[in-house]
Amino acid sequence: MRSLRLFGLLLSLAAGPAFAQSVPDKAHDMHDMGNMADMPGMDQSDGMSMGRMTALSEAPMSREASGTAWQPDTASHEGWMALRPDGWMTMVHGDITLVADRQTGPRGDDKAFVSGMMMASAGRDFGPARLTFRLMVSPDPFMGKGGYPKLFQTGETADGTHGLVDRQHPHDGVGELAVALSAPIGAGVSGFVYAGYPGEPALGPVAYLHRGSGSDNPSAPISHHWLDSTHVAYGVATAGLVAGPFKLDASTFTGREPDQNRWAFDRPRFDSRSVRLTVNPTREWSLQVSRGWIVSPEQLSPGENVTRTTASISHSLPLGEALWQSTVAWGRNRYTDGRSRDAVLAEASLTFGPNVVFARAERADKDELFTAPSPLAGRSFRVGELSAGYVCYLAVAPHLKIGLGGVAGRYTYPGAARAAYGSSAAELMGFVRFKIT
Image 1 (cartoon, helix red, strand yellow):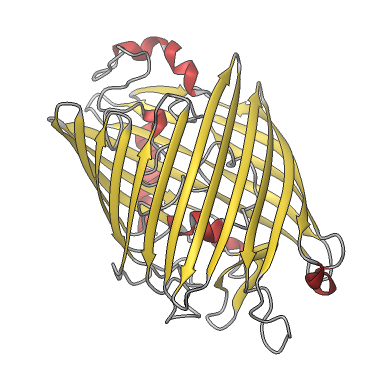
Image 2: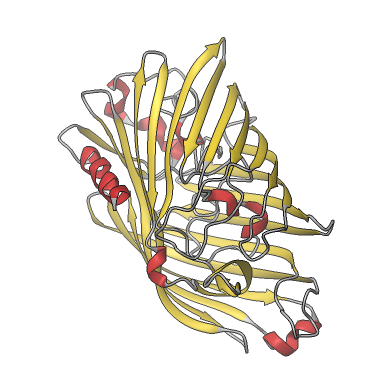
């Protein structure tokens, strides 16, 4: 409850009598932010920079995403922002989504649930340094420990005894409680430190909840545990350097993924390591490669460690009044016993006016779909999903819009799995989203 009270405090700061300005739906519209040009600390030399208003460096604020990850400078960056007379910059953003989910076939299920995330941040300059606080909360625990139906999804547990299979786990009620400190350390070079309990280590692309190419899709990727499942880690310490378009960051963090008690704070261990190199060669592109040495990520397999390697390319292209955003990512998990499992993902979204059209294609090697005494237990299956959706947003109040949308997907899987999943397993979701803007 302390975290919820802190979130309320940051929200009240953002809504206070100080200057308040909505961040435009498209980052390229930040060229025309009007009266923001006279805000203290503003640097308009490149039409995008906002002085020391970013947590990690002098880069445009639209570049910063989840944890210490980067996205393209032209990526969408919505939120309710305020610059207070005392120098604190506050921002609140996020969404709450009501979802009706249907997964077809013998192992399918139906469920209505609420998901989403709300994030608040507050930052201020102290001389040449910048101090930033972040808090992210989620309603996911209200969907229950078993999460929601999602065919071919694996990872984590609902009861501490059995693994979640064909279900997406809920995220913890508090997904980030973190602080970052950054400062210039030389000509064109800055350094930063980041600590979170919980937080996100320097591993993988921007988490799917936050990246523009996938954030409008209410369904989690089945490649989640190959790319970005470490985005909620109970104990993270990261240090990094930024030099122009390059960022190098490294973390020590808790490898164990959150347990089934989604309102609790798990024990910090700081037993795992990661390193990531990111480059934004132009405003429209962001590329990263990373590797993590994760100790005992799964509660049900305490002796199994994972070496995770990821690579991704994100692109964000303004097209007049529209915005195209896309991500291609690959991840490999190599386990203690030497086996390796790969996953690939490609997703994109097109925003034009109040409309967003999105699509995702992915494939993952899964060996957790069947357990003993099934003769298929331990066997690896290459499974995938092709999905597409649409959402239309309408402004309903200052700083609030509502979206009505849906998503449909078709799963792909080998014939040996058809006895369990049927011949044409599919996904259907309808949703209503409330989004801060």
